[in-house]
Image 1 (tube, helix red, strand yellow):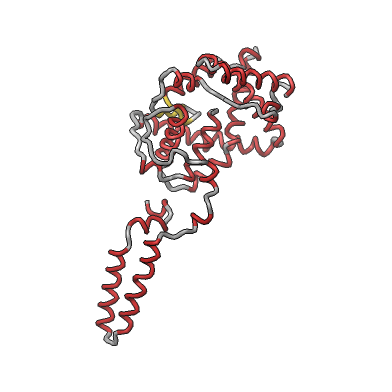
Image 2 (image 1 turned 180 degrees about the vertical axis):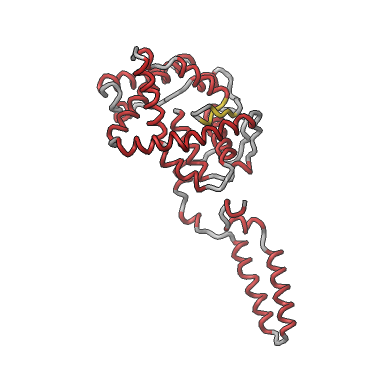
Length: 308
């Protein structure tokens, strides 16, 4: 899975599964550095990358943006080809080679994604995946400058591919290379705007939840065990985005019983003609209702951010 797709999935599940972080605490040995870099990245994104990405979306027609994304995805297939060769996965390396050949030849240098239209598998493996296949499956969370969520393993792989980018073999002019690097960053940020815009409304510890969701997804991809296993290993993104309406509208039985209990006791209190006795009965009713209602019922009917 490409870094862009992984980040988009992380952000999406961040919005849908905010409870992961409490249930699955992750030991973060580099938390001091990570939080500082997270805040730096957040400010750079807020004041530079996001405005530029919005301007890019506004002035650039959608077909042009799609062509730009296809071009850089074609270059990522070249990286995926090399990564799969290093891990001796000949089948996936062959698929990557075919994708690059078809998109470069018939897709106007990669501007058109003919391979996807032909349903050719899209691997997008990275050097981080290669290192994991060699045995480095567990790697601690690491916030990469500018690019955000990563691991130590994946950061080393990203640094190598960024230091020796595929573009260097194609374009010899340094100005062209830097322009392409900037365009790639802006195009990537633009593709994530719709997801990240919703994060600003979440009153949560954004660092913690981003970290835990990212680590859960990445460990599942490479077979790591740093993040504790739970019973939700088969979470499906489609289910998280559009849960079954019947399930969403179902009220726990315990909550229904609790709703009825105060009403019955209040009716008994109303029968009394003595005002003092009625006040005492209502007080007893309220105390009984507080003891009767389970904590789980309160949690099930209250939004997460209203309780924390």
